[in-house]
Image: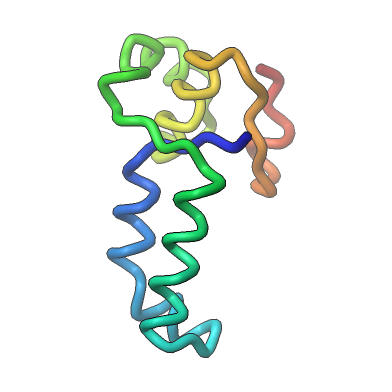
Length: 91
């Protein structure tokens, strides 16, 4: 199972025009992909992992990744990323 902060969906929607253009998608195709994504990823609201923000802040190389670290800590699961800074960060 995959897990993500809910704000990731908001980010996708904020940048949907760029995503649609970059991948040559129609709006319908984009919508289908988002729906499929929601079936394979469990999304969590900030309130469900916010108690782990202090720990996440200490290890996150980028403040924008704090939510991902906090969620990882709260679920006691590894953090999956292709970001080099994150890959080199021992949790």
